[in-house]
Length: 472
Image (cartoon, rainbow, N blue to C red; front, top):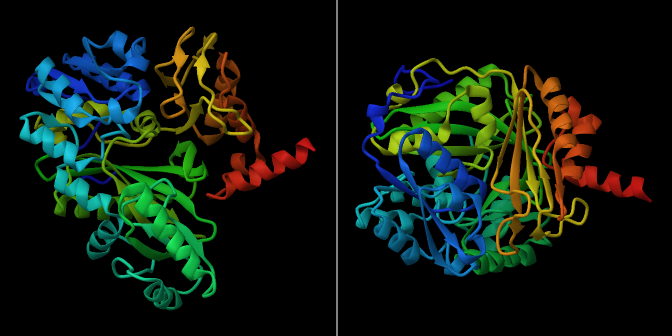
C-alpha cells in the first residue's frame, strides 16, 4: 500500500492521542450514524445524535449518549437544515461534527459554518471539498498532477456548437456530464452529430434543475467499463496513504449494489502505481481525512479518473475487512491532529477477499421503495460476516429517506470463499414486513459471469434482461 511518509498500519493509537475531542455530534442517521457512534464509544468520546421526528425510535438515537430532535421528517427541514444542526451542536457543546456520508458530508458551506462556530468538521477543508466537488475542476487538477484521465474537453462547454467541435475532436461516442453533479443526473451519452444538440440541452437543463448549475464538460465514452475506486487517508501534516481499491461495477442506474475488494482486474503493479500517484497528488493539493478516488477501467485494463468523493463511502467496510484498518476511527483521530504514523503503526496488507451487498428496502424486481414496519429481522452471523444496520424487528422504515437499511459484508480467504460465504449469509438474512433486495443479491451471487469475475457496469442490464426472459 502506498504511503507518503514511510509509516505503516493496523494498530490504533493509545487513548492519550484522542483526548482533544470530548464530544462529537453525528450529523446523519441510520446505519452510518450508528457506525460513527460505535467508533466514538471505542475511543472514549461521547456521541450526540440528531434525529427527525420520523427517527425518534431509531437505534442511533437509542445508543448515543445524547440525542436532539432537529425538526420534521423531511430532509430539508431536519438533516439538511444547517442552522438546526449547528444549533444542536452548540446546545450539546460538542467539539466536532462527523457528517457520515451523503446529506451534508460534501457541503463545503456547512464545513465553513462549522469552522466559524469553532467546531471541528471531521472531513477535508472546505476549499478542497469545493475543488473536488466541481467535477471539471477536479479533472483538470488530476490531469495536471499526472493522474490518468479520459480524453475530453478543456473546461466547461458553453454551447452545443462548442460541444460538437469537442465531440468531433475526441471521437464519438462521448458523454457530457454535470460539473456540479453526480448520481447520473445531468449526464448523456452522445453517439452522433445529429443527436448532440438535443441531448446536450437536455443534460444542461437536468443539471441546472438538480444542482442549480447547468455547467457541462465532455469525456470520451467507454462502452463497457469497470468502476474501480481507491480508498485514501490523509492527515493534517501532509502525509497520505492509499489503502488499495474496491470494485464497484455491479450497479443499476449509477447506484451501486455490490462492492468488493480487491478487484480481480487490478494487478499489484497497477495498484502500486496508481496508489503512488494519488499519494503525491493529494498531498500536493492539501487533502485531509478520508476520501475515495473513482476511476473507469477500459477494456485494455487502463484506469481513467472520473471523480473524487471527499468523505467516507457507503462501501468503506470492504476495505476495513481486508486491511483491518478502522477508517471511521482514523477519520476522528486525523481530525484531532494525529499523524497517520501514530494512528496506523503496522504495515498494511490486503488479506483475503471481501464483498458487500447493499440491502435496500425496495421490491427486488420492480425496484420500488418499500416503507413500513419490519415484523421479523434475523441477522446472519458466523466467521467472516459483518452487518452494518440500524434496522430492527418492529422498527419502522420511513418513506422519507434513502432505501438502504443494511450492509452485509463478508470476508473469505479468496473470492470463491467470499462468494460462498455471502450466499450462505444472504440465506440466513430474514426480513419480513417489507420488501428488500435480498432475493436479487442471492441471484447475483449465483450468476456464472459474476462468479467468474466477467462483468462491467452494464452487468445489471444484461442480468435483469435475462431474468425477465426466464420468467416468461
